[in-house]
Length: 275
Length: 293
Figure (cartoon, each protein chain N blue to C red):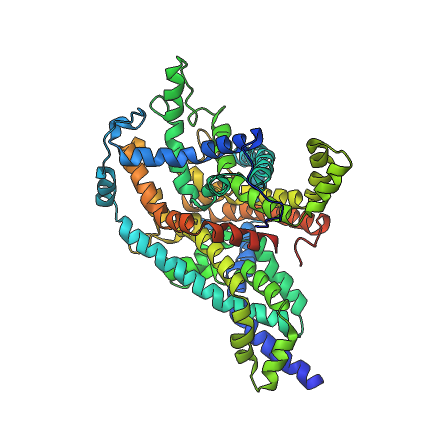
């Protein structure tokens, strides 16, 4: 955020008052989910301040579906994807930024195509490929198509390109090989990009649904979103308040992280967005 | 020199290799396979792997569901994008000022972005539930009998559009916020000295300067509108009578519920062509400086 020297705290103008109102409107669906989850079902649409608070909905949700296991699956999935992305994208971005090889620009445009055609667009064929590899209903199977991320390669390439070449030359004079130069010069200087990309990637894959839905088939592999998706709808007899509790359980880790590190999240999305 | 060049070549390709293998396996090979399947209709029983020419494409022409999902996709995009971009700009202009509670306001706008669409749909499902749902309960309080928002073909797409606007506006706000920071405050001072009002400044200075950002967001929003179908699984399953069905969801049901791989492949080819045409628009019409630093 840029604070201009003349910045001062104003009294709320009409526009800012409108801003508060809009913000209240915007957050209200989530506040409502909290209301429904922490109160008995009969208070779902009757807002009385005296309504008793309860955790019953959460324990019901946990009894009816293994959300803790789903949470663990999501955690493993997201970690696996991010680790793979960091390794593969770093290597590829280094090649694109600092190596002069034949076919470099063609290869780079082939990478960029994936910005548009993400693995879930080709869901039918990618499922068949996964079946051939014997990876259906495994967490690595959900993760693997996302590891060579065009977005990650693109962002890191931009960052590596802006690293002063003098630093690389100094390291080379000290006898560093190209992999050591990558480890000692490029990666440390790209830390803000790794943080920004990491946050964007984690929140994207924490929330991803369609591809995991098709690939996962059992409690041991299902991530939170899919678990929530198969949990049940009001028509199937599951109580509305319990669904709200389950919904909050599924978003809680990411939501808490977001509330704690709000600035970093917003800035990461900005950092990743303007490149 | 030549030797350095070739060593560079080898190292470059070696570094690229792991990513290239995965990119080939999950983007290029399946793309080629999709074209192949759309012609050879693999996997639907007796016709397996036999050339059937343009049969699947002829089916596209006469399939009323295909026409419906394309129109729905267009309505969904046109209904969601202009409003959410307008709101996003408004949010960014609000949050770009300094005032009490600014970061709370910004957080409220941005929160829907970090929630999964599945969870969002779960919350909104109850808003739209007939009779006992939140919206109909509120309407009943005023003595109005609310419609069955998701069960009526006339209201279902609008209901989904409202939800999508809520989900996306805060995300687009981020891009405007980033762009606003690159605009020099002196411009505003100069405009003020010239006697330009706030609205005039917005219309003649700010808005044109934000045009590349608006274009960038628009194109990405269009692409997103074709990719995002998660909410349909919770809210409508494409119904009633395909009134809320979208192309990617139709591909999913064709392949995984009706098991018609060949037709699903032909539908995927259409989706690829649509995305490719937007990629071309993006490539030619857009200020490449936003893309390449």
